[in-house]
Amino acid sequence: MSEFDDATHVAEDGSAQIAPGWDIGGNANGGYLMALAAQGLRGVAARPDPLTITAHYLAPGTPGPVTVEGAVVKAGKRYTTVTGSLRRGDTRMLQLVATFGDVAAMQGGYQHVAGRPPELPPFEECVQRSAQQGPVRIAIMDRLNLRLHPDDAGFSVGQRSGTAQIRGWFAFADGRPLDTLALLLVGDAFPPSVFNLDIAEGWVPTLEYTVHVRGIPAPGPLRVVLRSRFVQNGAFEEDAEMWDSADRLVAISRQYGLLPR
Amino acid sequence: MSEFDDATHVAEDGSAQIAPGWDIGGNANGGYLMALAAQGLRGVAARPDPLTITAHYLAPGTPGPVTVEGAVVKAGKRYTTVTGSLRRGDTRMLQLVATFGDVAAMQGGYQHVAGRPPELPPFEECVQRSAQQGPVRIAIMDRLNLRLHPDDAGFSVGQRSGTAQIRGWFAFADGRPLDTLALLLVGDAFPPSVFNLDIAEGWVPTLEYTVHVRGIPAPGPLRVVLRSRFVQNGAFEEDAEMWDSADRLVAISRQYGLLPR
Image (tube, rainbow over all chains, first blue to last red; front, side, top):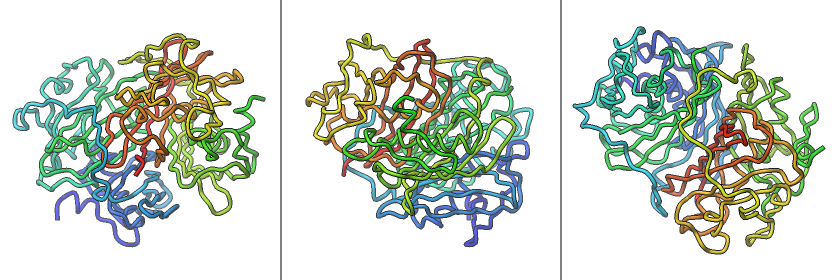
């Protein structure tokens, strides 16, 4: 078992654990929490892949026992839609809605891709994000092998690029292959791209996070780009693209984030 | 009362009507259905604006009685998250999750906008979309005053631009001012931008549609741009930006759409 599989195990009755070590300053990463919930919900849906999944974040997730509660709202011929929550007792941490399907069965047909993977120096020449990098311990970085484009990585030493963009490589530290469940983690695992703007670095809470899974990743690390174009009125969107080693787009994500007040 | 207010009326017990005349070939427009559901849900949330709202589409919405069912999952100091559905008896048409807040109270603070409204010829010089334009009657176009950029409008006479982009103006036909509820309709009211690619024009079902409301529209029509960048494996995303007459971004939306099979 890999660390990610261990940390996203959900029993048949929905009981699970928020594992220690996937947090930032004690609060579990939002992408990890979505993946944990999705592991339970795909059991409920009885289809392999989250095609589109949305979580609203209601309370921080600290390590310990939780329940993934899910219900089918429609089971169709090719897709099954479920609602659900991740909760501890009466405290809901995440509220979700998702449609599951079979990404492998969707491959082929008409293709028109107006985009390409971000240009990155080789994996080894990018800047590894470590758990000790900021004022707060980012424990999840011990689980990941996250490498940032050197041009986008200066924010952590006060050199902000002025463009709300982060490009980098994503892999698990223990080498676990990527699949459609792991893709849910990726778009929330990088530092927020707004850290490259002239705002106070700090906690930028996510109200909502949606991932569209568009392919099954080929072996090897992903190339990822995150951008925020509209940072205004206390809020921002953060859009991510995830590209596999075969230059295929495998997922996109979008968050509704809040600026530090 | 305007046509849109009439068509999105929801009684206190959640009972409502899918109004005739907001359809494409008999099935109500998905953005209209989201607005109808959101009207009910914002009553449940007791906050004025949908900040981020997601709907999964489960069954077509034909005119007639429906119920908007909603429940608060968290009421915080500034935001309230609700889940809900739009249903007729046992048939669920939409399943939703949304966080409501007060957009007016969020105005100000740090601003960094990396984008601008789409460049469009004046409203009167753009191509009005009519109800009679395609093989199927698009009745909703009698409720709207939708004007397409001439360069993007040729698809309806077989001249596709080859770029999955549609730019245009949005207003209500009866002049109703735009507000944050109306913004939910906009990103789904335009022809799909994939109609400008070399695919069979036809029904492109929406699995999921999410809108982020980022501002309160100033008076006057909106300028809107819709784009699909990743059309692959039977699916596509469609991203819209909505800009008001004061050149402010007021909403973004994203759909998970399916190609005709």
